[in-house]
Length: 123
Image (tube, rainbow, N blue to C red; front, top):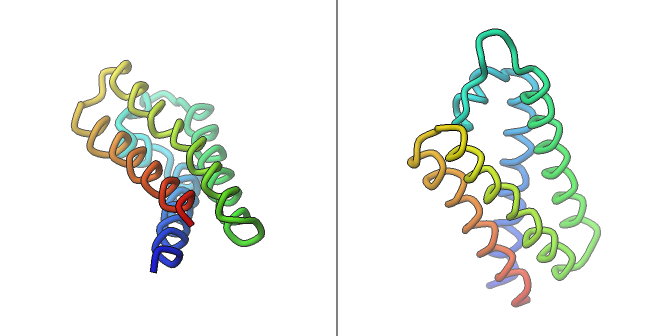
């Protein structure tokens, strides 16, 4: 019972990160607004592209780990990668984004990723 839940959550989280990364590459301005730090009208292409590539890469790496390694390896990956949404929480708050986005999206995501890491470690 625990194995499908832990792996299922890991797959969903990583697919979601792939989606976010692809969205930042395809519709960067809308993605930045959803992230909580809107892009400046005159650009910010580097920030938007880096964010897209980073998220796309993390999501694909997570899916590869799920497919080809052990639960422990996936758990360690999820534990470490939880630093990304925690950092995103701080970024949104420091740049003047709303607390609702910082905590309701980024911090909540970090908690779910940490929960999944704990489930994977329990296998």
